[in-house]
Length: 535
Ligand code: SGN
Ligand code: CA
Image (cartoon, rainbow, N blue to C red; front, side, top):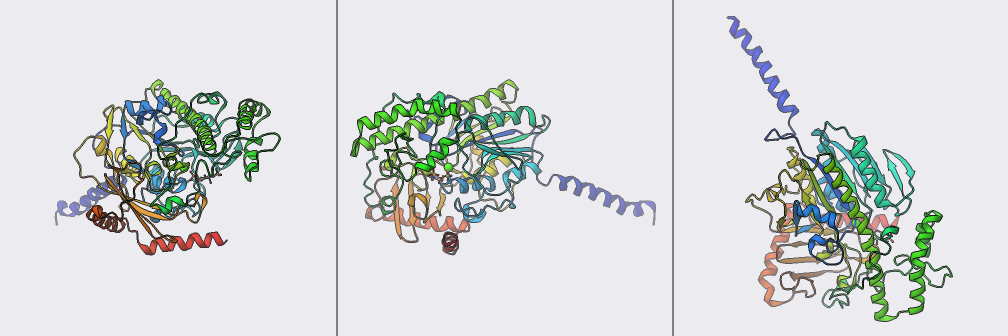
């Protein structure tokens, strides 16, 4: 045996070990070039309707800073959620999986922080991670080097925040504070030599829409016209008819519309809920608040509107407060964009603006969300990444909140777990010709529950939608979105749609199989809901 043959196996072992070491360390990495990984700022507001973003072409308000993201980047016109309610949507964003797989099917089922999530994955790939603002997922956030979050829904005035486990009440307005904390992390808390991901999550414009004083007057002189289906009679749509989210019927004069009259003549079962929020304010905040709202209360008492006049009055108050809270969100986006510019960070930072779902601004006569109808199923999505995305790009493909996880991992040059259900939409932003999905799957489970929206699931293609409401209803709906964008005519039993209907049924079966959903799964979550409600 010569030296060579003795040494060879030994060298071979060393060589293989080096390879294993290198590939082992980089098992998460598939970065193709030598570009530094992009920073990521993920801005998530709560209940922000795309109708209330001027970049979408609606004329309700002006959001110049949010619009800037689309002008300098991309605007998605068919971006949707997988389950139109807060905690399930956040859970889908973090895990890249539908609700029945990640387990957070409604706001009440527990969230399992031990499962993998986007923040954990980016952190493993070398990112520093921070979460600021509303998260609404029970338990201690995992995957974040730093967090400063609102407990539960949080409060508009003088809110508590939990900073890395320590709860403190802060003086001020929630949207402004969230922005301040986000900027403070960017400026003073992050390490400048590492890529970062910041989840910057606003509570606004969530119910009950308490504006900050500088926007009290912003919409007071505007007279909002109701959407053309505001007085919807829900014909052919029993699941819609049973709603408890009517602007006229369900918005509470004191709780939602802030008519906390000092003489207590406006009666409301929810007076104490509003009072609790009012009592959080300092004397100075209360006096500014009263200077604005007491005038509105007096006018209301003089006018004493009834019937249709009351419906229109309520709609206008709702819109004025809702849109005022949006202005503060837009200001915060502007401050963050300015910071990136000033630090020379804009070019290599992906900035995403989206909401946990859409919202009704009077369409079908509603506020709130939950239904698979367009205004709440769809959600705004604007993405800027100057280094890679062509300014002014409009993306019309069907994307969904389960896609954020794989998309951002893709941009970071990292691989995703094989059980992630979303798809990276980076190729769409790169304008590559790719095979893209032709249908989206949707589920909703928070029933029996607030606003009385039945359990349902369905699919949406580019032109059609099929919905199945189940449990105490067994009802199907089919919409022809091109000819009936407001979803007023349920075509399920219309003979001229027979072929489309069977195609959609087949697609629904296929998608349920693809996403590993089933009747047994529906039954399992239903039983959990009913059991939880007994306790
Ligand atoms: C609260 C609101 C509801 C809202 C849910 C869920 N009621 O319960 O109107 O649908 O949150 O919203 S309130 O009386 O407390 O304002 S979510 O965005 O958190 O899912
Ligand atoms: Ca929400």
